[in-house]
Length: 274
Length: 274
Image (cartoon, rainbow over all chains, first blue to last red; front, top):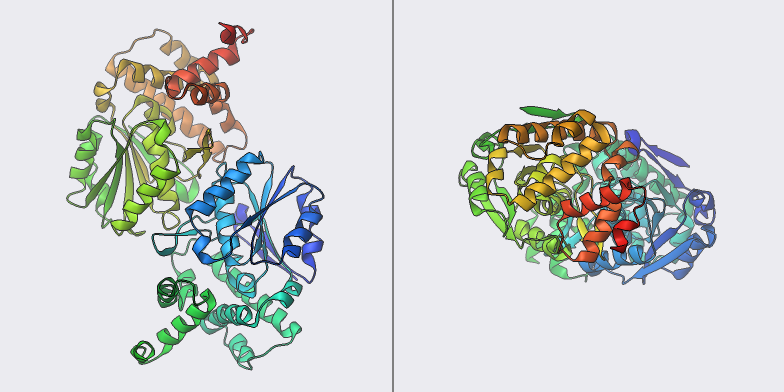
């Protein structure tokens, strides 16, 4: 399935297809070099499979895993490696990983030579259903999440649901939390569908596709988050606070889930006194 | 005189008027805070006059002067001060200074919370005729000038030619070099006008106005420098090389001037063997 995000000259496709990461070689034909960023928590085979598609033109940069590394230091290291490898606007950058890798890599692509082409290969359910599309890039700074960044659209997002087989149960739940956020704010049918709690591979793909469709329709209406797109921050204000305070003991999706419960509760204070 | 730069929803005005920096208070009515960046080489009175217009809402950040400070460290310091002062998207950022201040401040504004409103008050002839309009932002990195940055348009550019009276003769010549670049590439009439070599205040204002009009027409045709805007880099390829190699002993405008001579010479090698 391919979903088109219509944003005038920044329009792009989101491809959702099993084993898509092995079939993306034609994307890279027009570039001289393909700079791939992944992190130490992502199974190495995924970046290697994307690199293989790039047919000898790939350079792989591995950053340390974890939200605490989504910062200026890592950003400078990525930019430095891009410069050392002689990247120009005729080359492209790819993120292979979850939200952390996607956010910081897209940010680096958006500011390197004032913007070079960027492709996103999300490998977690959370980044598939939410962060990989929509063009929000960023890093954390001064204990504030995503406070430094840009709006910068990818040239394409390639979602390969087959890579989810290596994802931990906990990470899957984090992704389902963001999908549930999308359902709770915009799609009661998806909300009902998700209420059964566990899913076959086919059902999981349906959740991804529907979440991406919802996200696309919101982003098309309000790309710079001036109005309706703010709804997608449901659960995130409290969630980000918990995430920062907890110093990584809780994952992003878990914090958002707690944030949504708190915002939906008639007596949310009860949540914090226990 | 006011010149409109037409770039769809990113359109903005460039105002050219003596003593304009004392009359910009109404710009700031809609903001809660006005964050002003200047540098240690800019006469303090200019940032103070802009701050006074902001009617008690201003915070002033003074960076160290010089191209060697247009880097990630200064950028992080600016962003940190913005964060410490609680700036949000309801506030704005102003640059009061030359090209270095303008480039790095605009870059900070473009990435802080993914973009907050930016105003440019150029105080050197060079930044008035060229860098303050057009939306190129950036910092230097790894010995490459402006390799990290964004395209981000200001909300308004306020050019007050009366501040040029404190500018050194050397700095004036640097500005004239960039104006001459504009004339050499796009306006033979301006080129002839400039060939007389020294100018009254009124003639200087004409050079500023005409340069800004030329820049505007190029930027409107090619905002992201994919075609004709590249012409404005005349003299800059060699010029940047000289600038980096010389480690600040020569000013930007001087290096561009040398670069233009080299590119125009039938035997440019002669320039480098002396």
